[in-house]
Length: 280
Image (cartoon, rainbow, N blue to C red; front, side, top):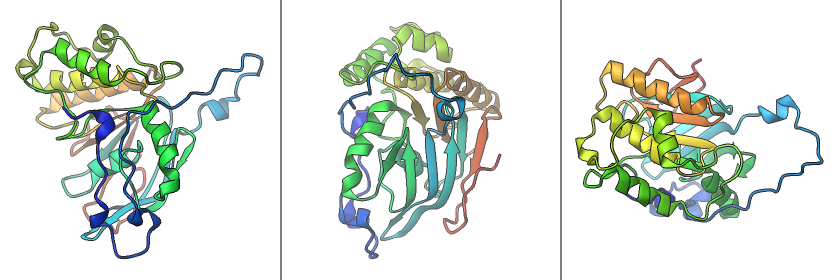
């Protein structure tokens, strides 16, 4: 499994001819840098409710254009803490790249994006903000780069992911969990000695989510939620995402079928020229 902190953005060779600032630079590659968290100020009053519940992801007119055309375009999205959001679309809708862009792991070439209070940019000047977002968010699965490896055991997978996450922030909302706690939260009931290849499809999703919870995860994302799942298994997977979201985490998943358990559903059109807005 590729380190979730090393997912590469599209090459600049694929950038469009128009002079977008981001097209003249490399996209923000995911690094293993830990953002320095702000220290608590115990003497200050609690934040007003409207501040505490402010959206953690705000996208306006978000788009990515390569030389071959638009990957995604005109995406407007607000995601609050505690929400489970499904980005629903078939292959060719740019859903995987959109998912990565929303957590600072892929670039975009149009629109604006604010994640966890940080304004991301498609210019080189926004690299620091992207690093801080990556340090506070977690990727459960993005195929084929990030997924549990079939030749490892459950326990080996947990140790490997924990090793990657050393040195990252550990305080605040979405703080890393111990593996046993993460497994209980997602409903994974498999001995650590179990080979990943021997897990069912639903348990492989649960394992991917449990591993993501070992990292800071104020926003957690998972790609292809419905891959290989029956309808009842997809509903169970959606309920697992809802359980994670109930801890105050914002969860985003891509899928070609709705699970029926999401707080919000966003329909992604195959034709990128259409405007994308929340469907619920």
